[in-house]
Image 1 (spheres, rainbow, N blue to C red):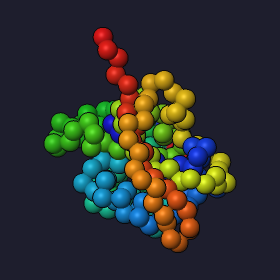
Image 2: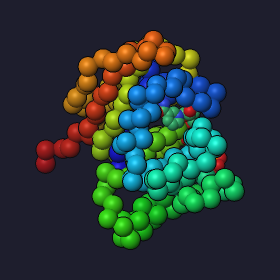
Image 3: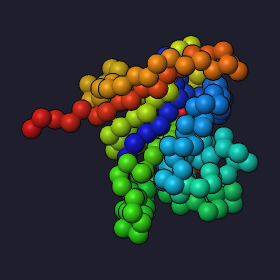
Image 4: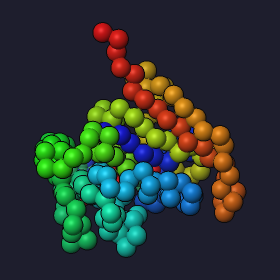
Length: 174
Ligand SMILES: NC(=O)c1ccc[n+]([C@@H]2O[C@H](COP(=O)([O-])OP(=O)(O)OC[C@H]3O[C@@H](n4cnc5c(N)ncnc54)[C@H](OP(=O)(O)O)[C@@H]3O)[C@@H](O)[C@H]2O)c1
């Protein structure tokens, strides 16, 4: 399993149920990285998607204890155990590899599933933004290492700089 997230320097990821900022180039990258894969997210994150529905061209797994009609077409999981069962079912029926299962938010689901992730693709915005939702701080977590950082890019619409960070879980030597 891997995670994709967009954070500010404090690992803030959202405010009042929405993203902190929309960066078109990053959203296109998110699409390219997730098309044809399995995305896993919580019901509140679904509400941030276009028309508040599962994303097309991807297999969607929504964590919820409260199924809604808008979730039609997605797999639903009401617990971690059900999610893990669904992942095994999808692996046995399709040619999905571990890295095809992508955790895409929000805060509660990143926290729940980080222990199952071996890679995190983090888009880092260089400016602090208002936040009430956070991703776990990988820089202070001894189980994670930063292995790659892109050049800084500029988002012309928001006049923000951002870069792409790639973190990997440190695998023990024995
Ligand atoms: N920056 C980014 O990359 C990024 C990405 C995604 C989201 N976000 C932001 O994150 C924020 C939302 O995060 P959030 O933590 O409030 O919401 P969330 O994680 O998207 O969804 C929470 C919901 O997931 C369900 N859930 C959670 N744990 C569960 C479990 N163990 N079993 C079954 N269902 C479970 C519950 O749904 P029910 O209430 O339906 O039962 C819960 O209310 C928003 O601001 C959003 O914009 C940011």
